[in-house]
Image 1 (cartoon, one colour):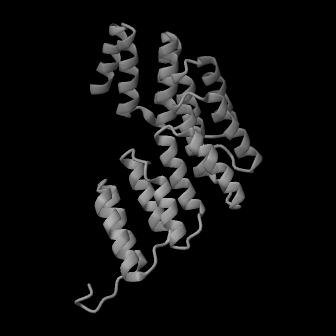
Image 2 (cartoon, rainbow, N blue to C red; image 1 turned 60 degrees about the vertical axis):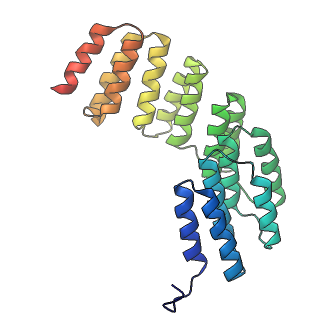
Image 3 (tube, rainbow, N blue to C red; image 1 turned 135 degrees about the vertical axis):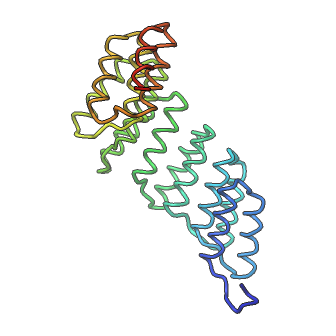
Length: 248
């Protein structure tokens, strides 16, 4: 680019960083950040956020303190994008104590979590098995005027299913419908799992039939989830019947 008289800017470098991060080539991404700093004398918050997302993809959040220090050296302040990248990374590797520390700092920095922040927090705590904390963030969401979405409910339903809190899962399913939210493929598959784990074949098959009537009659994932659930509990005749419906 330089040979052709075209100068590189922050956007050019950030695109390159993002490309390396998508390929999980973090060492190359780090080199581009250093080159960006040397040539432009500046690295913006977005570039650091992209770097954090890259580290999150490879489950490597050990460099979090160094990245924060590098940002401070550049005279950059934390913003919501960077904070969300930290939250996502910490939640993915189960570092809930660091999440809590960061949330306190966000308060000091006058940075308010958004819907992405809360959904990531709910997912992280559900995966860690801390359902009471996940629900605490849902309450906080509402208090901040952010309505839980289908993504929020799907996350809770999956967490409750993993925790075998089946009655609670059914309750929140009905609450989601009552709020006027439209279930998607993930919602339906999760609820099928709930019924099968409960051993309630009749309701599972009734629910499956109702899903087909909602426009999912050719959805392979819905069929596979149902067949797998039946096979797991030994209902091979029913599984074979549904298998037959797939190929007709």
